[in-house]
Length: 272
Length: 272
Image (cartoon, rainbow over all chains, first blue to last red; front, side):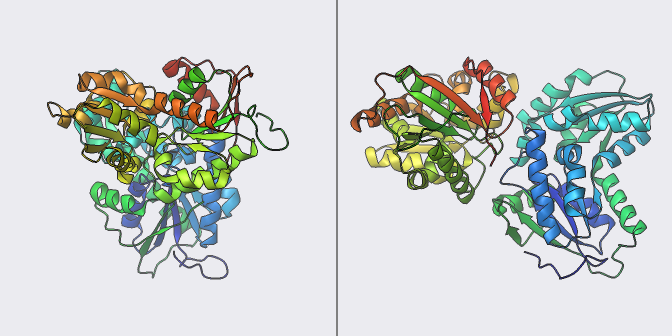
């Protein structure tokens, strides 16, 4: 496990990134590309994945425990690389950690508003994220005239966590959830869950022509901007990444390699 | 939450039944049918479901916490209505609770050995249950000449927890997992997960002619026999059931009604 240095965090301190499982690695990958000099610590709560079928209270409790853990590693900021947690527990993570916190909702919503030409936007996500209406509220605030249609796709996370990103039944599950949008006037779809970019090919096949927004890149931009504004960018570091999960590191390594092409050598385990 | 009486448990004390989620209700239903005079307390760990994709260490930790909680309710025995927990944590639950404990593996394996005419048996279950080889070992002990083929079907639990028990994509997922067995000489299949009986129709359609064994009924027999032997049967009670979950009671109630026809009026919440 990465050792924390005594004292306050500074520009050389790591950025903490967390998710319920492997989905947040899509955000991790974009942050690493954008900020190669930063040290990144990724935590995946694989003992309690998935979050998206759980209640607000439980999500806030789990996120608070992780925020406290990342704080103990003296991170300089936290990225909530999970739409469900960003929807419900952004304030709780800020309060508990005492460091700047970036979620994925605002960057994703902003990117969609920018991309859409007719203001008709689909949001797909976990049951919890969709029930929070976090994207809809954020989009309506930025562009009050827009039309937002929300749809929960709760089986997408288990499909990805099993590595079934291009199997035939997965194609049919994608169709089952999305066929109602075919031929409608929406021009943009937000993948409102960090697992969903791994199903992007199947989603594109079902809804060809739509602009597909995932929050990963927009979130990486937001992280860079926040660090820059507060003078906390690491300008001289060599970069690096540490991985911690709450269960089953072998499966995490395997999926990280197979789905994202990441070579993860060392994974620590932290149980709650 | 049901109040525990002071002192030791006796014949009038409740039977504790637990599972990671709603799957164990298939066992609950059989026990209630077999032993209508007993008080039953059902606990579903819906905040941490599913268990079957998690590691041995995590499963033992979660099961130990639940055993301690059921002990505090002064149960007279515990039924582990979950194949994954039965495979890994039977001894731990016995040790921590100090009361008799029934799992689902031995009853299910026994029923399969009895049912099979040619000794060729398929076992399907979660990744964790299958990796433990608990059924194979138990069957081989009872009938050394038998041939056991094990297959993990990790997407079945999320399908059931979403209520997709007869949807078209579910049919294809069942086919994806089971088509390899078609036309082979197996005559019996064990549904080695308490969620799987809810997919029985689809499984029967894919593998017609096979005897389908689920552990629920055999486990209820075992529970009756254990209580009878120790003089702990409740012979005069009026029966009753209490339900406790660690998250999302509304969803639990809805699925209990839709999938199992159970009317559950009151559900308590216990968070870990």
